[in-house]
Image 1: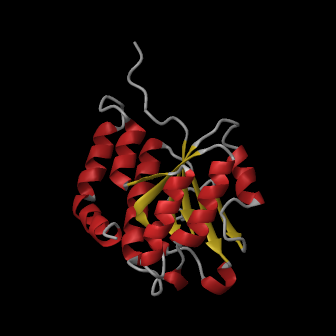
Image 2: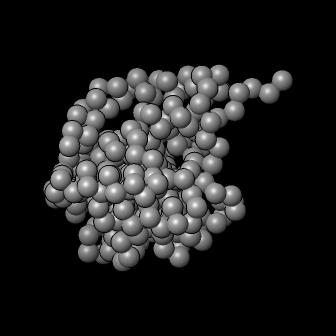
Length: 204
């Protein structure tokens, strides 16, 4: 008899423009990075493909090294693209995304800025018919007030605005899946940080 299946079967993690040059400008940048690290670890456990971008990398720098994207012992991204457009939904990303299969997918978005690149990426993915989860403790902007405005708009547009922990449990859907113990340990590992991140980024 087959074991329990995951609730979400085609998730993809989008990491938007978490670059060095933004570290001092974005409200609670370190908290966004922390939530992203948790989701990246979950992506390795659950074998979730990762799509990452930078905005004008030559001017604004590389992705933060602590995320470990593309490093020999770090996360292997499906694509790590540079862009000038604000939306992540560039031709390069679309090509990589199509390589995952023709089905509609569950797209999880973290990164910056909430009201610009995250918003435009979400709108593009919704237009393409994908289900989009915007992680409230994983997005921010230079001005914190922009975050609530953006999340309210995206919720009204049809995106699911949720927390990282809620998403992870929804992705699993059943404590009987093979990866549950490892995922449970991950949630415990980040328990204190998750509380801090929620308090910092979800208070508006």
